Length: 162
Length: 416
Image (cartoon, rainbow over all chains, first blue to last red; front, side, top):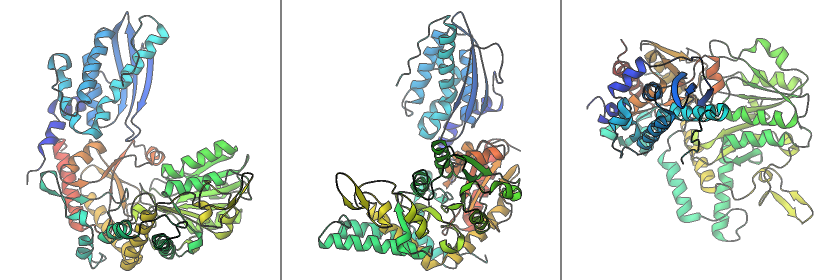
């Protein structure tokens, strides 16, 4: 009897465990234009997330999060990917990650776009964990939308894709 | 091992699901019975037989099948009533425990001798399942009453030091769980009920985790209303029970209006059927009720004293085994005495989801999350926990598998 099914290792990629142990950009920082608090009602995972947007650019994403390895690593990877991009580029990456997560394991991840985010391809095969991976991504989109709405510096596409 | 059910291996054979294997050929180690219990063959067969041979609507069909279905449904009510020391008239079938508790909380908001109003207090506890919190929050919001609660001690017991202040002349309802679904704590229901009755308060007991674990005598426990669900007592989902004292049930206004709950209906006004049918509007879950009847027969045959003893033995063995896992902290009482068969715990450095995921890869089913008891988790400063819960088919070898699985989880996440 093998100790694990192969799936377990496809879920818990080394990249994910590394980000879980050493999360990037953690902590809440100032300045910020919007702060949101998102929860996963089924498991109780929580994230408080702030965005700092200037001239259409994602200058900072800071956060305080409690949750499983998947949700924590996903938050870390997201901040690493999106900070420094234009809001438009970041929204594009968000779309690609969302498509990967909702692809039931059938979508081939694009490493050029997602970088470390490709490690989450295995998560898509575990329906119960997809929400964990998406928690902070949804929080970021929400926060960015309200930052745009309050500052009105740069109009941002805020419509939720169903 | 002293205290286990003597026919444990025979009992295990009664539950067909325990024979199946999971991905990778792993045998099933089912430690999630506080979530829902597995079903013995006799419950499955009883429901199938009803659907294959006796299916008809009840209490309204004037044919042989209708008579058979009605008789089976009411016989099931009688079995369930006998199982909890009740009379059949006072045993109401609901959809689940949540519906039973909502029935109580809703009808107490409406005009009647027990109506809750502004200035009244409703008292619950910090260890309730959400289904015994939210209905009372709604009641208080709708009536202007105030919600209060017993806090918890560090050991996971009710903090009764404030009982004199909490149960006072304004207290209209005291609603509490008999056995905690998260901490496992068995609460002193009778003592609290006696205190509540001294100030004229109604006592509502959530017995969802108690009826599977303990011999329950509704008359002796001090409750005025008591709720539980069928699927945790080896019965099917979709069927629950609300028991009430006759004078309380007769004083409560109807809950859902519709078929079967009426005596007569005119366009201007309706009159209502006597209890229990007054609270059973519409076609009930018939096969499920009949399945529940078979389930309590099955448990009654084993004997609830024996079931409780088995659960205490397994729980003691599990507490011992869990204590050997480095970094593991049990939430709730550390002794098996005074506990039900659910043990929630934390492991330093691994999130409950990740624990459950790794255990699942070894065929071990536990629950991870807040177990619908967020306030109790918050009380202990944790966001979520892992919970193992045993039942009549649980063996010491399965507890060993859990402990091994937890050791493996720690090594998988590279903890010491």
